[in-house]
Length: 327
Image (cartoon, rainbow, N blue to C red; front, side, top):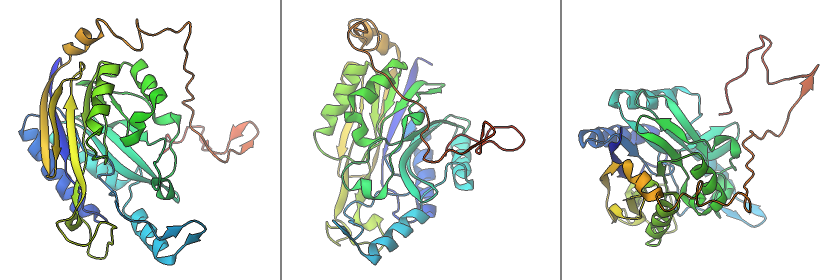
């Protein structure tokens, strides 16, 4: 496929309510496919939610019981990678027959990760990303990803990369994605600043790729009554104002940015524009100088405990088969 239609969904999850969020997911996916979309991008932390304005009752040297209660509630709404909930989401994607990138809060053991999943039209997960660097207070509630989830996904609309929110400010991560030949770069986010568009245009120009950024639009009404955000308790108070956009390989804004409302943004992408853009600039190819600059990337999964007995790691089942990849 050289011409595809992309959609950026600007909507909030229903905070702390997975079932209600799933209803929103189905509705937006149906709307986007009715609009002819081949690739649909949802925001950061769509499943599991982004509790903007919450401090989890933490201070330097202090954690209060109500903050632990809120974290337990947040954990309960997170998704395990290999779980019936993820399988159900994949089945919804398969029924819609569209490629999807969606942000989610992942749970493994007692740790949460800000992650994203890329599904192909068959509902199969072909890309999984864990955010490498949670920003500021996010580090209180999310763990750090490692280099094992930085692969570009292959889909029938091309090679699709993902960097979540401020990961997009990490130049070495971007270089790793460009070197894999990304054609469509997805940036699920909750960064609703005006300057975010400048970042997306720069990445499009730097990578000579299409960029799709989907940001949540969230009001106080999208959270339960007992949620107490810093911004106030008026149901109409905007907690995250959007700013989704779609940009071409030469930095042209094809859609957005859209602020202060829920919406779906569409753009028709001609993948031949990528070659036209790389005519004079290929950051991982003819414009690179490997004789001067070289990036070394560790893509191995990082584990804190590795036991060995007789030369075999204990994470190998007795039948000699390998366990599933890290969740």
